[in-house]
Image (tube, rainbow, N blue to C red; front, side):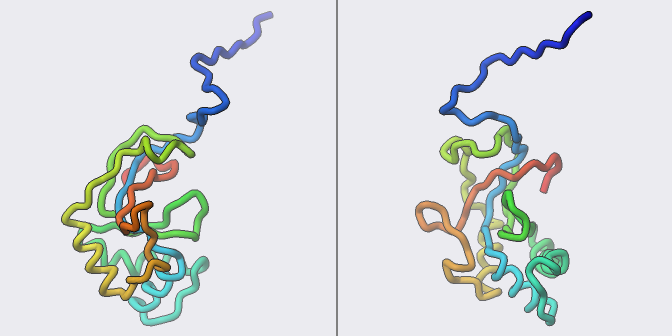
Length: 152
């Protein structure tokens, strides 16, 4: 009677994170909190939208504004209905959940970021409460995209 044996090579030490949850893309752009995104979607739709229940309507309203300029808009993060992001850059990346942020290559702001900033200003989202910033106070952020196998 044969038995199955699994051999794991290069087992990470306890001080290194396991590469168990892959992250296939890194994205760059502007993270917007849920309240600000809901307010923006409501302004564009002309009706009051609710943060969780109307997330599809929020996305559709904002995408109608951003997509013609080449800027994507979607929810990001490990927990749904928390943050949105104006995505100005994306590329394939061999990352994993909880990897050291210092190991994630950072994008340089591009021409699309000028358009995204114009959209942010036009929507009235200028406070630090609406737009998240990096460690240096800059609004442009590079993130790993969670477990999607397609281009965002």
